[in-house]
Length: 323
Image 1 (tube, rainbow, N blue to C red):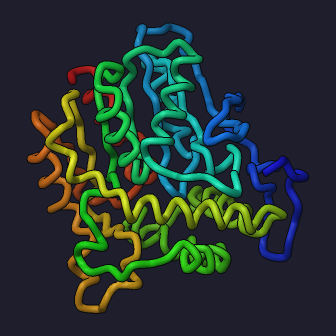
Image 2 (spheres, rainbow, N blue to C red):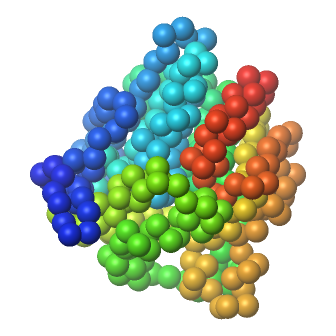
C-alpha cells in the first residue's frame, strides 16, 4: 500500500495515513526496504544510539495495538544506560507497509526482523517483546538462538491456547468486520481495563488517537485487513507449546492485573473469567522455560512499561545486566 497524504482532521479527532503519515514519532524514523513473499516492502524502525555506548544492543518488539514509538520512555532509559536500541514497526503495523496479500506468520516477521538486524550489523542483542511482540520474541529466540544474548517477554500473548480452551473459531472476514468498527471510545475503554488496570492518565490518550486515527484515515480498509490477518496469526500460532525448547537466558516481566485474552468477548460467558489469568500464566511460563526468571508487578496491567515506566525500566535494566 502506497503512502497517503498526511494528517487530516475529522470531528472525532485526527485521521492518519495507512503508514501513520501525520503522526510524529519521538525519534527519527528510518526505513528498511526488502523483498518478502514476492513483493517490495518497507519496515520502519528506530535506531537510537547512546552517547556513551556499553557495547550492547536491545531490540524492542511492540505489541498488536502498539508501535515502536510507544516504547519511548524505555528507549530513553536504555540509551541513558549505554545501550543502543533498535525498535522496528513490524510489517502490517504503524509506519510499515500494509500489504494487501501477505502470509502473516511469526516465522515471517522474525525473519524480517533478523534481516533488518543483519543490515544494521547488530549481533547477539537482548530481544525484548511485549504482548504480541512477546510471542514474536519467543519465536525469534527459537529460530535464532545463537543470535540472541537474552530473551525478555513482557506480558506476552500466547501463554494459553484460546481456541483449545473454547473460544469460538473466528474467520479472517469476521475479524475484518470487527476491525472496521474500531473507534477511540472502544479503544480507550479496553486499554483502561486491561493495559492500565482500571486507571487512566491523560498521557495515554496520545496512543488511543494513534490507533483510532489509522481507522479514520484514507487507508482504513487495508489497515483493518492486515489487522484481521494478524489476529488470525495470533490465534492460530500459540507459542506455549515450544517453551521447553527455548535455550537462551529468559526474563518474564508480568503485570499481575492483566486479563488479556484475544477473543474473550466471543467466548461463552462461563469461560471468560477463566481466560487471561496472568498471575497463573506467568508462573506456568517461567516453569516451562528452563532457567527463566520471573518479575511480577502486582498492581500493573498488560502494559507495565507504559503505566509505570520508571519502575519497569529499573527492573528491566537490572534483569538484563545480570542475565
